[in-house]
Length: 202
Image: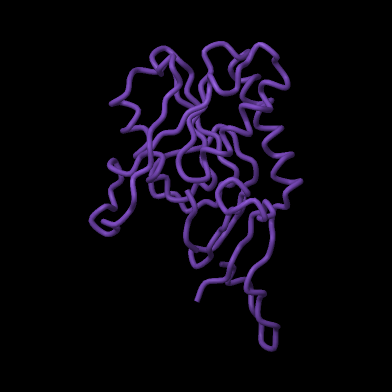
């Protein structure tokens, strides 16, 4: 979930204004974070049995695909395509009245379904927790997983619900006036350089 908010920073008299944006994760940083998360997922699950990765559109899905590829590189018995899916949460969100034009994405589950599986929800940025709450509600309509875990590339704080990620690429303290932008080639175009940046708010 890409969220809104940019560093106000500590200001003193005569201090220079903060940069409009600053990179906090490069493409290499993102790759290293996903590699570490993949190892953490296998360790927490004690292997790859019954694992499913469900990405939350839009950027959670390509991140889930990248994680699945890294899991397969560690465990050749894993078929990345067979354990990866996409979970749309649009109709379960609690802000539809304020954003009625939000376009639903497709939910695509692995052929095995989610019953009895260890489902790892994957998203780009964890902020208020409301997107993840919607994802949990959506899962209830689809089956009964054995367990549900959460992996995010960035945890920026400012939780409004009691939700915590199990696997975090980077904890990124931010102000509520900042915007955290995750750019991925799969979503933003083949010429895009993968990165995470903080943009200053108005």
